[in-house]
Length: 171
Image (cartoon, rainbow, N blue to C red):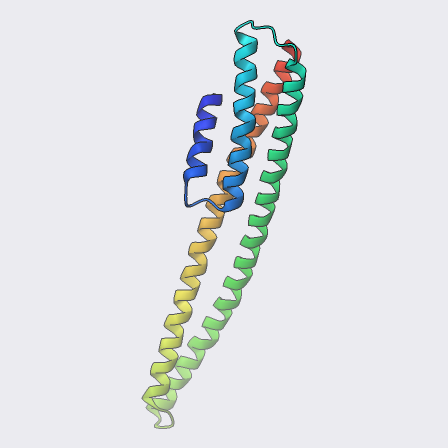
């Protein structure tokens, strides 16, 4: 279990899709997991460890620090997602307004009161706005994926906390 989690941290650290916060958190988590793995292997091998409690306390502190980093990262991503949603809403309202302007420009053109250039410019603006909306939606999807990665790490951390508590009972 620990070995798989450590390997998953390596993939997150190496992944270019992850943000800097996610990679830093994964590095801290990997250090704590490696220390926990060493402590666990010493205990299970029956090797007497004089400073087992100190090592366990250090690992516990490192895990707490990593937990706080994870939580902070999730909070930041959550805030960014809400900002993106607000921006998407504003762009959607702008698109509706621009679509109404395009309809009006086409009516004016049919009545001989407007120009084809105005219609083309409005259509171009609408296409650019649609591209912006698509870009924001892609960013939102990427942020949500990062949040899911972090939430998976938090779940793993909770499992590790349980393992540490069981180790404290053994030592």
